[in-house]
Image 1 (cartoon, rainbow, N blue to C red):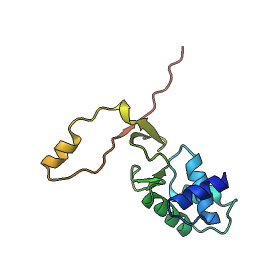
Image 2: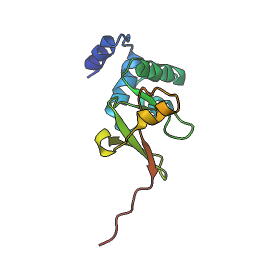
Image 3: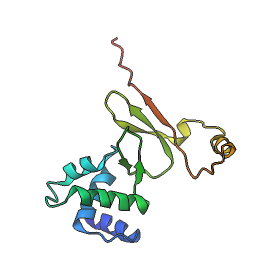
Length: 139
């Protein structure tokens, strides 16, 4: 798997160092939306000398090259999403967990024209829903 990740990084013009491969292996294999601190903690056993600054820089590089999406969904926290295809998100306000919501699950009409009416050209958009998971009723 490391070889495949290294090749994927090369195709994006990223030099595949051991640290970068470790970061990529983790973020591309999780369905969570981790922040840099979570990534750092998750790979420390594999790459004990990696600094948090290196993780931050690597994640930002991956987002710049299109491998990840950098999101400011959670209050005061930047997270990274390995799904770069258009989709929406729902945030569990009790746990802070961020879940993907398929693009087709929501209908957003006139987003670009509404923004244009305010003098904005929209490159992309997504909807972020916030709520609590319903508890399952007892039968």
